[in-house]
Image 1 (cartoon, rainbow, N blue to C red):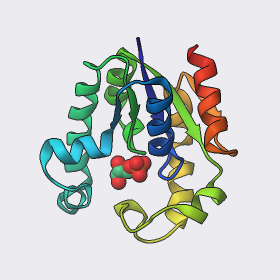
Image 2 (image 1 turned 135 degrees about the vertical axis):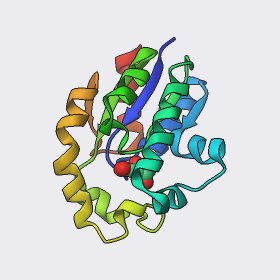
Image 3 (image 1 turned 180 degrees about the vertical axis):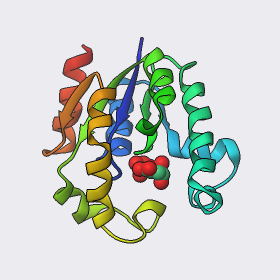
Amino acid sequence: MKNIVLIGIMGAGKTTIGKKLSADLNRPFIDMDDYLEKKYNMSIADMFKISEDYFRNHESACCKDMSMQTNTVISTGGGVIKRAENIAYLKKNGIIFYIDRPLELIVDDVDTSSRPLLKNGAQKLYDLDHERRALYMQSCDYHLINDGGLEEICRKIIAVIK
Ligand code: S3P
């Protein structure tokens, strides 16, 4: 079976949704940020301290790894759409869902301390959304609005794959 791949901006709910889908569907789960930190034994924050490119190169290598997976629920980092090669790897065995959460809801509950790109505040989130929305739209197979609860968004995804 194909992977379920979740893309979308930081704080959209990809990891939370991925964990629940994995439990509901009894499929393995990979959070790509965790996978990347374990694979290279280095935190994302430390990679960004070297440079964003350094982080992105490692992220691309992990996308390649994901093309070898099947039947897995995969939550990606918000910037994965910045490189077309990443999306090609993720699409190889996956169906891509754009988890689109209204920014005002994200601002209320996102943890900015663990996200290097948000260290200067929520305005960055609006700027990133502006920069990336078209890329999310063109990268996804399905665009889903996440403005309800966790159950609701998981139901929408399961309805697509069943
Ligand atoms: C990033 C999002 C983060 C993480 C890194 C870069 C981005 O993942 O990959 O900090 O460029 O939007 P989350 O979307 O899981 O926070």
